[in-house]
Image (cartoon, rainbow, N blue to C red):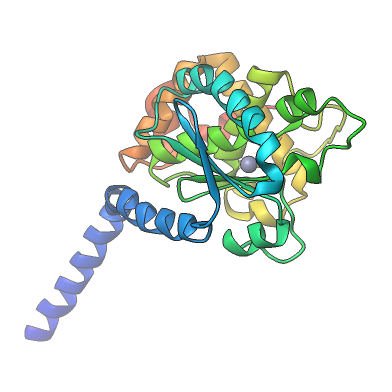
Length: 268
Ligand SMILES: [Zn+2]
């Protein structure tokens, strides 16, 4: 009898913790993220600091000349991105500008050789110095604003803030690309076509194994289709439900009354 009670109790605890797992995750997420955030800024504690109304840039002397540009572009898009996604972060947002892409990869634990123009992780945005990827013959300010990482990574930060870490990668990538489109008219993979678009399951469970360009393009198209049909307000509401611990399909259903898998299949 005792054994039965123990087995029953364990089963009950498991059931309850499964039910509350998402809720526990979203409640503890901000604290865990803050600790990790401190670790990231610790890595650059000897970097210089400059700031504007909403942003702090950490940088090394060779990048001093780019600091005004980074702050200008970040401030220029601050209002519209926070309005689109319905949230203003508390406190100033840290952008670390790396002149050494290998240090950036090390600090943000990216695989070797996987150099990114920008990364969002644990409340911090990091960018590679514009000098490393914009040719001196080009219009630096124009290229940095339109093809650069600021709007994209800032959108990731807001999604993470509101949804408290509770979202699939494809959804945050889709939102980040949608913001690039709304802010800068940038369309990801505009000229690429495919006759076999990825399903919701493939995007949710296999994102990193999919063809990167096609997976990003598909994510962008789905999120854009959601806003075309239900407006930007729907994205803001979905993010709020995610932040309360509902999963994406539940949140989408709450907001639109539709099945997400069916909706994704209808986006061609
Ligand atoms: Zn991204």
